[in-house]
Each structure stands twice: as structure tokens, then as C-alpha cells.
Image (cartoon, rainbow, N blue to C red):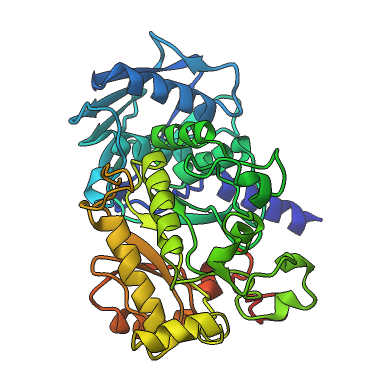
Length: 448
């Protein structure tokens, strides 16, 4: 009994004096040994910032700082003051993959004051989320310990993202906003939304009215243009960039449920993936719908689709167009009309046809001289495309400037970066970073 009591005392003392564990760990950090208790309120002062940003800061962090001590508030003439100095006072645009844009200095003094210095408003958010992790909310009052504290920080990687699949399961806007809150707190700066797949295509697009009547799970499980705008604005204020993904040319079964577009697909199967017997055992899932790369109508569809995506997601840093798990053997080479096209155009393999497809898509996305049928210029972009790349897809050639997102095994990362040394990379090895696979099941084997 005495031993257990002493052990409890030791654990209690160690917990009481543990320094906060800041995630991710700052680049430079120094601690002191003093404590300051906040008993009344917190006051923000701004050396240089527009009014929208000031109000956004107060709104976000009054919820974060006072999650436990709800009697406290943001006010004036408070015992604890936070001075914010930002050099660039423009409306916040965290639309850069430059780590220097997120750089900040946070100083917390013993006398009840803190200061934040940043070149850009996004750096202020990063500093305040660090401060939120330093606050001790487990005391009678909101406390800051180990003062003075001095932090100089900026991220090591400009892209830090979470891919969220909203096509295999629908998530309403309040849930997505909570995800964004969590991304901001942990300084993850990109939310990659997987908007389309075999299971559903749930985003309403101006060029294709009524499409979600066929391609969504239900009329209540869709994302309207206004909802997308609302989500993008919420993400912007929280320092998160939304990256839209339309997965092409594979994973397009849901599109075929709309009679207008069924003829654009090969390998279309009316049976949905989760209804297929042993469908979960097929690598990449069943080949339930792949765009036909030999049809002019396919590229007309993609031209309208990309215009809608560009107009709805204007502030995205780049645009993701999938490119994974295309069964070129069964769905292209094995299709008589596609094979005839290949023979007539000297295209020898399925990989060669994939490269043919990629060349035209690159022209659709980036050629600013393209026009619509009525002669009006089409909306294109000078931003890069992003594509999925796996261990088994080394024969595919991607357009110059493309960002390639690797999702194979971690042991093959070096082979991937060597094969595609001319491209920038996003590394998402499935055996570490897939939440539904991760480091495997309880027996040790990966679920993917």
C-alpha cells in the first residue's frame, strides 16, 4: 500500500511538472520555470491586420482557448494580452506551399503578455495554435507554465495534407468543418477531398444539371456549389487549402449511372462495388467503370468538368486528377472498339494509350487557347495537376510539372523518386499513413 501511494505521488508530481508536448515540435524552443494564471480574460491587440482577420482570430480562438474555462472570454483591459504583428496585412491567403509563409515567432513573458511576429497571416494562426497547446486547461484557472517561453518556428515541409474520401461515404458540412478545425490545430495545411469514385459522384456541377440524381447516394447526400463555397471560405479562415480530386480515367462507375454518360465508359457494371461478391478481394476494387480514351465525347465531358472544378476551387494550389488503378488490359486492350483505335493509331500497349489520354487531358487543363463550341474561351489553369502513383505504374508518363502522389509501400519510395526524379512528390505510403491500413491489423499484416 505504501509503495502504491509513493508511486501515485511520483506520477502526480511528474505530471504536474511535465512541459507541454507541442505537435509538431517547433524548430527552436526555450523554456523558463515561472507560472502565470489567467483569471479574467484575454485581450488581442493588432499592430497591422485587416478587420476581417481580427474578427476571425477572435472568433476561432475564443472557442479554442476557453474550451474548458467557458467563463473566460476575449475582451479588453485583461490581465493577459497577446500582441500580434503581421507584416502583410492583406486578406489571408494561405495558398502557397512555401514553408516560409508559415514562419512565426512566439514569445510568452512572465508578466502576463505574449507577442506574435509573422510575415503573413497564416503564420499568426500557426503561432496561436502553438499557444493553444501550451495553455494548461486542467487547473482551476487557465495557466501558462514554464515561462518565459520563446519559439521560432516554420514547417519543414510546405505540403502537409489529409486526404478525406467523401465519395465512398458522405460527410455533411459540419463534420468536414470539424475536420478542418483539427487540421488547423495540428498545423496540417491541405485538405484533399476525394470527390468522385465508383461508389458515388456527389458534387453538383453547373455543366451537368441533374447528374447527382443518378450519381449520389441520395438527394440529401450531395455537395452544392454554395456548400463548396462555404467550406472553402471556412478552410481559408483556418489556414487550410482544399484540394479537389476527380479520379480519372478509372474509378468512374458512378458516372455511368447517369444515362447521358454511360456510353463514355468501358467495363461499366450496374452492380455497385460493395454489392459485388468478393469485390473487396480484387486489387484496386472491381473495374467497374473506366473512361473510354478513344472518344471525342470523353474529352468534351472532361473539358466541361475541369472548367467547373476550376471555377469552384479557384484558390486551390493544384488540382488532383487521380490516375490510379486503371485496368488497361481488361477495359481498354480487351475492348474491341478500343483495340481497333489502338491498331489504327499505332498505339501498342495499354500504358501507351494511358499516355495518349494524359497528353490530351494536359492540353485540356493547361492550353489557354482552347475555346468552347460557341467560340468563347475555355477556363484553364496554370497550376499543376496531381496524380496517384503506385509501385506497379512505372510505365505511365505524366505531364511536365505534375506533382505525383505516391501511395505504395514505404520500402519502394526510393524507386519511385528515382523513376520520377523530374517531378515533385507527395509521399503517402499506405503502410504508414493510411488510416484504414496503417501499420496493419492486430496480427501485423497490412489491410491493404
